[in-house]
Image 1 (cartoon, rainbow over the protein chains, first blue to last red):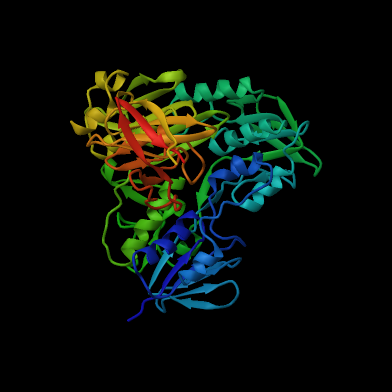
Image 2: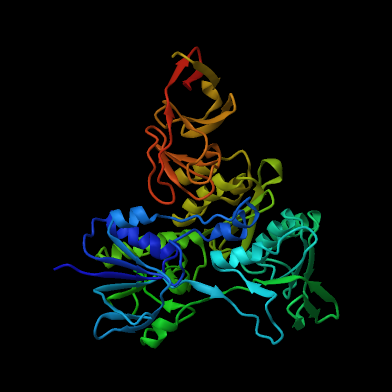
Length: 409
Length: 104
């Protein structure tokens, strides 16, 4: 019997899942449904190269030719509006219905909205390529850009905007930038780099009012300061897209709740990527939701295997990177699992912080440095985390001890 | 063509490691495998033009430092997303403790 596979969400995760189904030899119908007009594309460049490159480029992960050759049907510019679980069908916004045997929800996340009145046409968010193009048009010398939120999206956009000559102010309600998931020691390096590049960072400053008259935005901070900008970009986090799943009666817990095999409570419906929360084996099944490119890719592929019956549990260690100016930050694992920190200095001012649990287990590693200075050691740290290794703190801290030698131990 | 170029001393590269080598406006990556053989490929990842020599060598795989694209450095074969374009490989020989590559 030929089964039909439907994937809702044609981003990195959904796109990878569709391709993976074919890589695995599945020959039945595969349909990929996306609400954007584009082929599946990489989102990480949107805040970086897509802003600063000579021409805006969309970095598609596949092509129409490959999709045709592999018999993957891509329905674009259409939303899935309902799942009829009893009938095993998905209803689309164009009125059609698609029958499925297995369904993957890769619906992603959307920018968290700033919950206050006064926002207008000059207050924007970044999620899609089209958003990026609209923002890009404003990033030029002399233009004033206010960035609300000192997280990764905001800071990467700040770096891009500076590169294009705009005047940039970052407003962050928390006491420092990158409060979520980045150690203070590393956040401070990034903070100083932004200041050296001419960005004004106002941390610990809540917003009391926004007024957008369509020509400029006036942001009043709780402390009384006022930031006036030609464009305000709001980057205060993302929320998972769960409406479709919730309306179908699937359980939601900070995202579409799935088990270790990325299966929802319905054995024929899976969820993967930004939209789902799942138990992370490496931390004893702690339920997390990750907004990360590699996770989207890996979970897309894992969901494809499990839609075909592999029964494989998620086992990866979270991994994340950010590029700002010439600096790259990489983090493997979740640093909030750590109780103590060991620092390892590398060349060119680069360093890595190893986060150890109370029992000595390595649970995370956060590194920063120019270019790819920390990449290799972060990758090795990731493998040590996956092995649940308990390396000696002195070895981790010593530049002369190769991390690879700890892996063999 | 016999355009062999001296890249480095054999001992400059650890076993199961990689080194960057620039020559004539081009960049290469030179590898020493765990079984002590030498190999050479293009120096930049086919995904986003990142120097592979900053990446990690495990067995016969080089992993890009940026996005973990994987290649078999002995054959140049791309090993799955996000990379899909193979790396070009170059002949390598050892001569009097030097690593030479034929960059033709």
